Amino acid sequence: MMQKFNRNKGIHTSGSLFIFWILLSICSVINIYSLLSETLDTHINKVDKSHTEVFTIVTTIAYMPLVLIQLVLSCYSDASSDKTTKVNINRTQ
Image (cartoon, rainbow, N blue to C red; front, side, top):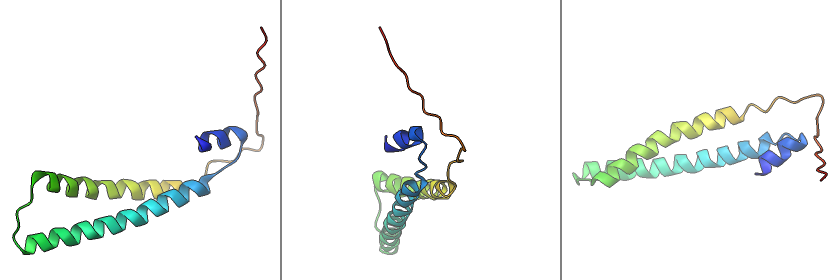
């Protein structure tokens, strides 16, 4: 919502999006590391996994490339315009 408000005012706020995606990427890497180390430990100990645990592993690993793509895309800021147009709508009845 803040992004839409700032875009309407002509303010470019790509920095806040970049910070969000970089923090999410860091947290996702930590999550995947712990998930993979847990998976390797259970694989070594020959413990069977339930279907929900396999689903969690697959979705988390599929989620990480999407977050990294969003991080790369957030590095490119919106094109700045020379003129900022503000539309004032006066409603008269």
